[in-house]
Length: 279
Ligand code: C2E
Ligand code: CA
Ligand code: CA
Ligand code: CA
Image (tube, rainbow, N blue to C red; front, side, top):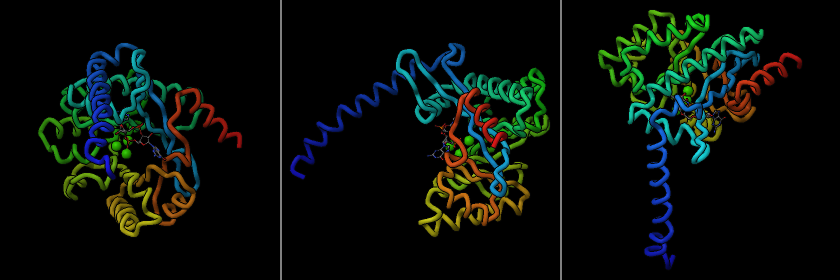
C-alpha cells in the first residue's frame, strides 16, 4: 500500500483521539452515576441443556447517559473498577437485581435463581457481605437463590480481605459461580477451596468448539472437571442450535446465550417468561 505510512497516521490519529476523548468523558461522568438514575438492570435467562427449563437469570448493568447516550459495560466496568466507583455501582445492582427478582417471584414466575456479577474490586468493600445479606432480608429473598458470579482473578488475588469476604458470603448462604472459566490463571487447589456451585465456560470456547478441536477439548475437559467437583456447568454465548446440541451431549447442565434469549429489561423478561408458559 502506497499510503501505509502517512496514510495510517492520518487514518488512525483522529480515531485514537476520539477514543481517548470518549474515555475521558466516561471517566468524568462515572462519579455518582448510581445515584443519578442513569443505570438499568437487564436480565438474561439460562435454561437446562436437556429440557430447556428456566434455571436462572443473570443481571447485567446498562448505562444510558443523558449527555453521551448508551455506554456499554465493556467500556465502563474496567474504569469503574480502577476508580472505585464499582463499589456503589455494584451495590446498586445488587439491590436492583434482588428487588426485581423478588417482584418476579411475587408475580408467580418460576425463576429459581438470580445471578449477579461481582467485580474483584468489590471485595475491597469490607461491608460487601453484610450489604448483600441485608439486601436479601429487605426483599425477603433467601441468599441460596442469589448466585454471585466472580472471576478467576479473585482466586489469584488470595488476599485476607477477599478470603474473609468470600467466607462471609458463603456463611450467609450465598451461592458462588466462577465466570469466564478457562480465560484466567486459577489453579485447581483454589478452585476446590472456593466451594463453587457453578462454573461458566467462557463464550470464546463455546463459539469456536464446532470448528476448532482444541476449543472442543477445553469445553469437554471443563465439563468433566466441574462435574467431578460436583459443580454444575453453564455454557455462555450459545448462539446456534448445533452448539446447544453438542453441549447437551457433552453433559453440560445449563446454557445461556442469544439462542435462548438476549438480555432484557424487566417487563420484556416477564413477557418472555409468560410466552414460554403459554407455549
Ligand atoms: P459476562 O458476565 O461474561 O456477561 C456476558 C456478556 O455476554 C454480556 O455482555 C452479554 O450481554 C453477552 N452475551 C450473552 N449472550 C451472548 C451471545 O450469545 N453472544 C454474544 N456475542 N454475547 C452474548 P454485557 O452485558 O455487555 O457485559 C459485558 C461484561 O461486563 C460482563 O461479561 C461482565 O464481565 C461485565 N458486567 C456486566 N454487568 C455487570 C455488573 O452489573 N457488574 C459487574 N461487576 N460487571 C458487569
Ligand atoms: Ca457473568
Ligand atoms: Ca462470562
Ligand atoms: Ca466477562
